[in-house]
Image 1 (cartoon, rainbow, N blue to C red):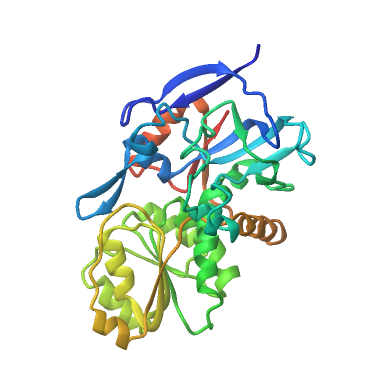
Image 2: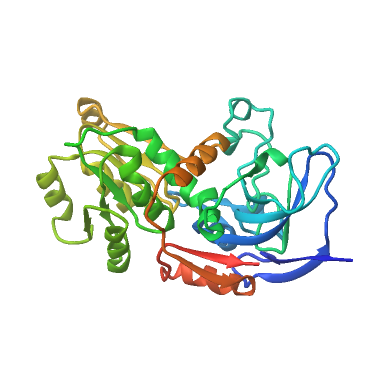
Length: 353
């Protein structure tokens, strides 16, 4: 009998554990996918560490307070269909597909509105609440979550399931910007660099990028940023505001106290800040100034199935700059997480199963 081989979080903070178990047999509309590529995402770090930081000393323990352990991480998955349940009609063996992982309960108001990624019920996100792609195979609950990626490079397409989708959904909330307005992107990790690659075609302007790491600032410039700055430099925020008159739009892909404060302070009157990152922290703003300056703050968490379909169409039709990608074998999953945690990754590591 063929076996499913996977690397699991068996204990928070400990090296991933190799496990083998019988291949699941898909029922209903389920589809069994043989994993080819799986991106290593910062959210995987939170699951590995065991918590998400809400700021002010508050934390959400990952994996339903550990009840779901052992759990196989990995939600940026490209693979090949090997079997489908009897009620599946479009999924056929041999098809190479990108997996949409942000699956909800299907019945709560957000799910009914097509926003399963912000499900208010029993979430079933692959690699977050159910076993994911650090594995030889993954069971997808419905064939509708399999997307045709055309001729896109499988490693790049895998990153679109989270990194690209998150960037796309955040930039979509900003819309098109007039050419005399500026866009600030804070954080040039995997998601931030995907946003740099998408920014010009989606918003009409090349972004200014702020990041602590000079290598990531260099990568941002190579992907089309018009400037890259170190937010720690003396008077960096004041200089940015003076040279731009304030930015009309900003996206915070870091999500720390400092990154939020820097992005928020950079806004001009009428500006819009989209917050994405989950490093953790909390922010204090002056309500009076916020009102008088007419500012907006929006939260943006990954994206919907429709948005991923839109992103794939955009990527197939547009020559987007190529995100830096490093590949590694599946058995280096723990080492890849360690590199990401140490800030040693430019772009994305994609595991090859």
